[in-house]
Structure formats: structure tokens, C-alpha cells
Length: 571
Image (cartoon, rainbow, N blue to C red; front, side, top):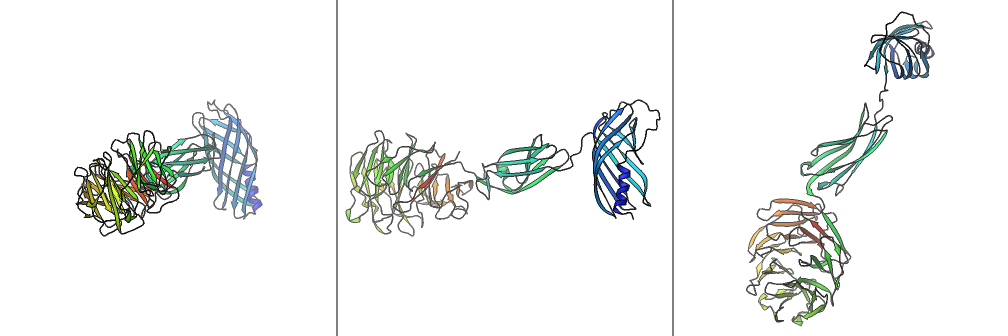
């Protein structure tokens, strides 16, 4: 076996010596132009000796008709029983011939033969076979060589990426828009960068690029067809190679993403009412003498209404020109002229032995204000209800409601034909009575639900009431229920104006947001996600049904820290 120096010497004689001469054989003319710069590589081996060599580099060819010569640089390595050695040096070819597409040249003592390809041509390739003797060792080398006008792209590009745009870190929602950023680099030149989704959201996109560096952000809207689990990968491609990086899994659930505007409030919400004439939302705040004035389209607050007492329940007069607000520490309710902004007060004729101030307030279609004497922190008897005729100024202690609980709630129909009084301070069940404006009287006490918190709403005509998740007719006969696995008893509900849909908040046991269920059969119509939605929210709908309102209710605490009101576009 030759030593390392021995077989490297053989290699040097074979590849790096530039001896040899033109034989002078007459050659015909050629139309091939091989002059200029070429990429060069070759592989040689003697399988018996276990010697393998590879080298590559660049050559510059000078052509004179059918003859050519070349000079260049090469670098490579050899390995064998004697070891491994890298090498690099200049070399030259002093003779070469072209006849037809055949090409021959010689780097002593080895002959090279092959063929030219392409009309330009753009490549040449062939074989090598020669015998060398050195230091008593004879090597029979065989191999192949090639010349390329354009050097091959030997190294794959580098690629990285990231994805943003999910409403929540763990899931992706309908209406989300993913932003997939892809960054690629290559030592020679990039051709494409892109992404690929496999699985439920199968799809791909790419961008043709040039240069050694490129970046692009692909915008991918999430649609119903993408619900399920998928895998996201980004890639970069050069002329010869593609490199892919897996960015992990993406799970799309059939829940609509946020279409929400958030409004910061100074306190939790006590009550609210929508003024269709002025397109405003009036919001009474817990423990404060103010009513916030909110534009629900722009989600901006206007100048608040200042009251002569702590704001409680509120409602508008039939003509919508005055706002009525129960004053929880004054034994009266305020009448705010919405044209001038001036407030006035009307004393409520409660039985003073009960020690309860006005709490809830609703205006019925017969122009009577129903005001409850409420203490939300007390469970037990002693509740009162007074009706006040806005036309005549006559007050009446409503003894027809009997002995009611001190903690009561009111909910009226959109057309004001019915008002539901619920005794929320006792169960089970909680008793309710319906005031019918046409008769000016309350119906009988009827058992409803065991738990309602603040969830009590009516349809436009009062033919349906939704108390928590239970449906009732206009006279409180049971009319079915709605439910959802993500909805718990502490999560509120609200009924659509036509009574066909119920909105159930979720979040206590699942992701924060709400679902829409059809009241006729509890069919799921839609799921929506609302980031930041808490478990003590109340729900309301604007009359047109296009905006859902979610807000924090204090639950009896006179004053709470700042809260957030959410306006969700349902269109």
C-alpha cells in the first residue's frame, strides 16, 4: 500500500501537471464556441486500492477554431488506506480538440474524452481512464468529468419563519387572518419562498424572488373550509434545492373571531338603555352619580350626564325625550331632559319602614314608570314596587304584587307591552309576575328558574321571556330551554327581538365568548370568541340585532374598579 504522501503524489501527477502537446492532426471547422469561463469537477477512483478523489473548480478556456487550451483553479480531496488529504492548486490544459460534438484533451498522463451538449454549448461531460505508477504502486483510475457554463447550486438555502394573527395562542378562529412571514437566504441566488399548509387547511403559496436574501409576509384569511388540524411549513428554493422548516400545528375551530370594540368605563355597569332617536347608549355606573353616554358605532364616550344622586336602573320615556334614572340614595328618580340636559327629580312614595331605595326602573306602554325598592345585598322580604303615571303624576304602591323579595329585577318587552318582575332574592324557584300595560295590572305569581343572576330579557312583543337558559311565554308558561356545553349558570344570556335566537355567554367552563342557539330546537347557529370576556358579564342587544353588548355587572358591590364594555358586531 502506498503511504499518504505516495497516493497524494499520484493524485498530483494525474490532476495538476500540465504536460502534453497537440498531435497536429488536421481537424474540420467547428461552430461550437467553448471559450470563456466554465465550472469544472471530476471524480476518480481505484476500487482495488480503495482510493477515491474528487476535485472541482473554475477554468477559463481559450479557443482557436477546433482547438482550445485552458487554465484554472481546483480544490479537492483524496481518501484511501493511507489517510485523507485536501489539496488546492492552479492547473492548465494546453491542448484540446473539438470534432463534431466530440471533445478530447489531455492532462498528462491521463486522456480525457467526452461530448459537448447544447447548441451554445452549455455543458460537456465524459470519462477518464488511465494507469499511473508511483513508488512501486500501479493505480488504475477510472472516473468521470464535466464542464458546466453555470456552476451548480450545491448548497440548499436557509429559511425561517413565524406566524401571527390568531385570536388566542392555542386556537385559530373563523375570521382570523394569519400573517405567515418567510425569510430566505442562499449563497448564490434564491428562486422562490413560500409556505405550505397540510391537513384540514390544505393550501400553499409562494413568491418568485431574486438575489441572495428575500422576505415576505403571506396573508391567509381563515375560512369555514379550514376547520380542523393542520401543519404549517415554510420553504425556500434555489435552482437545485429546497429547504423546509416546520412551524408546527394550527388548529382552526368553528368559532368566529373578534369583531369587537372595547370601551373602558370608570366603574361596573349598573344598567343601560339605547336611544334610537339619537343613536346613543346611556350607561349608569355602579356607585357613581353619572350616566355615561356612548356612541355604539364609533365606541367613543361623550360628555356624561351628572345626576343629583347615585345612578341605578334607567329607561327612556315613550317619546324618547327624557331619560329616567333611579337614584339609589335619594328615594327618588331623576328625569333628564335630553334636549337641554337639565335633570329634575321625582320622589317615590315608598313605605319608609322598608328602608329600601329605588333600584330598578322600567317604563311601560301605558306611560307608567315601574320602580322597585331594592336592596341587592339583602335576601328576604321587604321589597316594594311603585308605579308612577308620567301623564298625571299619580303614584300607586302596587299591592297587587303581594309581599315580594327585596332583591328584584325588571325586564320589559321592546314594545313595552309587558314588563317581567322577578324576585331574584329567593328560590327555589324564583317567582315572577308579568305586568300587562293594556290591563295596567300584574298577573299571578309564577315559578320560573332556580338561578338567574342578571340574565332576564324579553322579545320585542313580549311573547317570549328568556330567564337564564329557560324560555317562557308572555304569561310565564314554560316554552323550552337553550343550552350549550360551554355555558354555565353564571354565564348570562340574552334573547333576540323576534325571540328566535338566544345568545349564551361562554367562558366559565370554556373559551371566552358566546354562542348563538335557535330557540325552537337549540340548534347551534354560530360560535364567537371575545378576548378578555369575563365570567361576570351581562349581555344586551341593540334593537336592530346587529350589535351584542357585553359588560361587567357589579353584583351588589356599591363601587368597583374600572371595567370594560364590549361592542360585538354581529353582521
